[in-house]
Image (tube, rainbow, N blue to C red; front, side, top):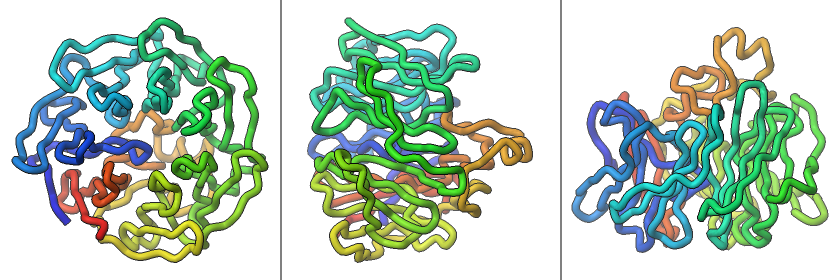
Length: 342
């Protein structure tokens, strides 16, 4: 295990749904509060040299996504989407939704489209925008939306999570075809769904009991393994799933999709906070009232139902899939760590 950030301020990789590595795996980007608020930084893994990439207003700490061009990062600030050139040039505002708060970003595989969840007063849903800002739209939804993701093979489709149940939905980027992929109640705690690499199928956790895969076309569901896989990150081929664990914490694991066999990678040492992870159902009104908070899709630092998020490992693969990055507050302050896969 290699610690690569240091200091008294919180540092963490981007969200587990995105890789934090630039092409070639020689450099990576991460969120740091060393300036007093969340900003994006780049770090050389060879020299340790670090430089700040975003400036001005704070970014959403888990919003950074690397464009397929390998040279541009996309982040959200408040109700705005921004393109950040790695070269250090001027940032470009792509989209603005007045009065809204946007969550983490997803970029279509062709690089043409962006999406993010929004909250605006009592309204919730998705925003969709062209990368060049020439076209955009708002897709409203009746409940909180988190984790929108473009389909890796069919970029006209976006899968997203509704909270609480039922969880898994999809919609076309033009706002048509909205449907629920699986009907279930609050007692079936489905979380952290994402695409199984380039297969186009979905994988998800039924917390804390099982890791499952859903066929995108037929909706057939298969249990990969009965295990407390938590945040999950499939490799590009869809053959392996990297995950962290909680209650009990057995560290980071790599799970073989075909057989369900797993092998331990390392212990993160993270504190893994959040009262709801001790339960097997979604947080409801009484849970939030007891914690005096709201759903933490905006990654509220004082959240005690599902976080705070920076105390979770959120592991993700490098581009070569020879390393993984994760967060840990094992020293008392969250820092970025790397572990070799082999």
